[in-house]
Image (tube, rainbow, N blue to C red):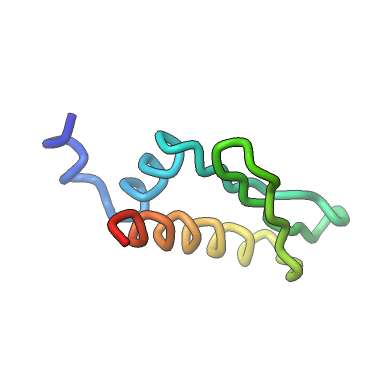
Length: 75
């Protein structure tokens, strides 16, 4: 499994790490065209973003957060 992980782009490694460690990042609809992001860690009280995102921003921010948590794993 680890050999296969080395071949994946960093963001997919980050997503896999987050899911395996119960770090969940998911959208909360505000309207038909805007969302907020919610981050939940191992059943603790979720954190909801103050910012609202359109579809592209939502996608970009979700990947950014996966990579952020992945990079902080050794800290």
